Image (cartoon, rainbow, N blue to C red; front, side, top):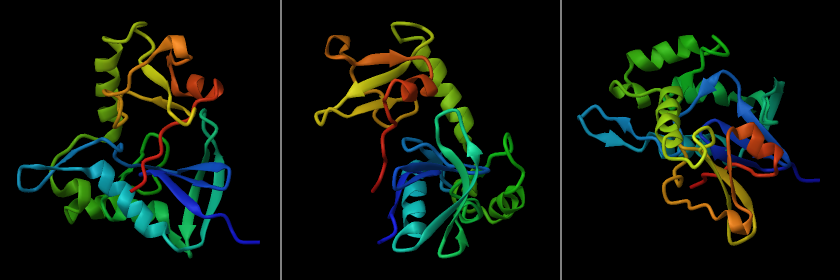
Length: 202
């Protein structure tokens, strides 16, 4: 039987079969996030992190070592692609931060990437956790219920997909509660109700 193919969801999440894995100890830019560039401009670091992740796993056997689960039902894991540590490669190449809130495992690699001005370290830029917090604060002020800014959308394929305020398509997603769409106060609430996050492939 052929092994399940790994599918990248975003810069630090992938699916293998029916299991969703969140890479342990790292935090990549959000799909819609833009970072500062060395020339004073900006670059789509969120999209580029996804592309880097896809390049690492593409055509390779991906194996994930579970470190437990998070509140959203994802397996926290260190994953390898033909033996290469994906988590380490994402941080070491400058396409993800070491997620110190949960682990110190990749802080050394982050420092090396920072000193070499790789990826997100080419210029001072906003970390993904701050990016999410800023987007959440702005969205809360405009949501019908000021505590619940997550949009639970139903697409043309009748798929239930939730969009957080930092989602790439958040601004253009409209909610029609008459058709069964709804607002959520947290991601775990959305997951428990049967909604899934969007998948940001190439």
